[in-house]
Image (cartoon, rainbow, N blue to C red; front, side):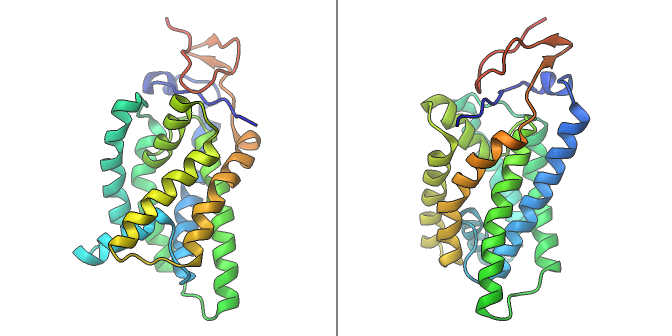
Length: 230
């Protein structure tokens, strides 16, 4: 099932209905997203495709995965220009807070002591990551840099988010592998499993946009459809 998602401007996001609830959903989603990425790394079974890239770059320059996540996020934001994807509240918070949450998780979560625990950490990491990604997307306050690629391409190509996400994760995985990042069975599970989890979760966590700037929206528009103007 396709979940209609708005492509609101920053101005409209500040005056959209249920803003406090959207901000809460956004921050819970971003925090869980970052911590679940750290959980996957600590499993020792391979990082998420983007974190394979982040970890490889971090090792080369002597930084942390979280800092590289923040850096790459702002680089990826350049792709918003040709996709005409709007930068919003969630876009900026995603770029900053996910990286912070990753480093917090890396500091607090111990490495898996054995394969059984590692496998559980891997499975939980993938599922929680997909659910929390859907949460911050569903807040409709602007997707993160990577999810902007996903939702932007979904809108432009008129395709569901699941297959789009898988294609992006596999492409990034190849780049990370060439740079020597931590690839394992967890990486494959993440690349193949995340898109479907997001797609299944979105209908349950998305807060529909009913009014913008006090004006009712007659329908829940598809991503990129216009909202009422003054």
